[in-house]
Length: 421
Ligand SMILES: *Cc1c(COP(=O)(O)O)cnc(C)c1O
Image 1 (tube, helix red, strand yellow):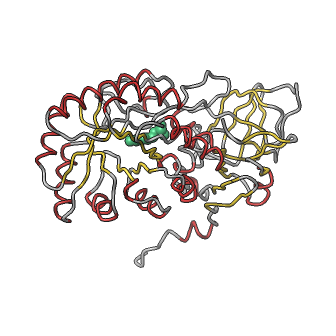
Image 2: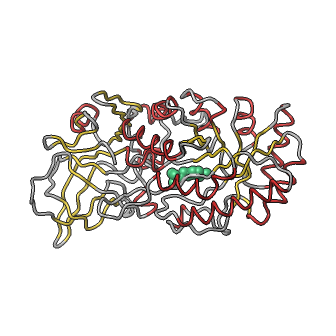
Image 3: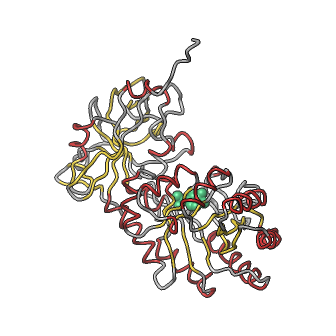
């Protein structure tokens, strides 16, 4: 469910006319709905009610400070994967005791930053990382609370590039090695074992892989406790998928996911953390673009728009589908015509949709790519020297630019010429 609906024939973001934003700041731009973000966060929070829990937003999916502040003020924790994300979470007012640090390649500098600023836990992904963290923490006279990210060897049945829980994937330690590494952790200075972590992938559309993984985690928790470790926290990762195409069957609901968590690990008495990203932010955002040209040759039609793969790379990178709607509601019963929607970048991969049935479109018309809130703006770049796409946040009838479009001069001003040139 989201808050991008037609009202009087115009596509609204809550109570704000998207076309009005377009005429004010130009296109392309991302627009997020605060009500949708809040609703999705609360669905997870409610799904875990009755359990001691913390919903940590996977901020790599959408990391604008305004969005982080919105969620952080509701009590959300943050799942960060870099020093930059850690700094963003702190800048948005999230305290260290609500920040978990994930990722296979945390540097010593990043560890020191988080240890100094305060951290709920590090989700450690390898033995060398554990040893490095022990050294950094001891050197600072601190103790690093840790979970070990366990790779349960479960196939999440998702896109190859975002499956993370099979033994060939680079993430975590194999579950059959976990007890040895926990024993090592318990012996290292500056390390305090607090729990177990797992994250098997993204855009999962079935609960089965979660169930398989969580049952393995429950069993491991019992073994680790028998080994003498005080396992009091389980971080169950993120990954619940969203419906990208309205026509598709709906992925599982957060409430079903919560029930599954209670069924599989609820009896362990652990504090539960989850790290949803996409399900909170995905359908809370749209990317608005303008038609530059309509090009027709023999039997093909291309709608050339002013957004491109640098603004939203998901179709090029993952073959992702995004529903496309016009900002002016098409008349009922209008004939749809198939077309490819493409951007101006000099790569054939710069294609948002192929043979998509669309209402009639002409130069200057505005369209929106739906479900663009997650892994959209955060993955944007200035490829082709296209200024970074701006972001807008809407709440009721309020709207604000939360990251402006850089001017061409600002963009060029970041390069420096060496004196000897
Ligand atoms: C990417 C990621 C998430 C979030 O995944 P979503 O599919 O966006 O929910 C959570 N935890 C970790 C460790 C991740 O890498």
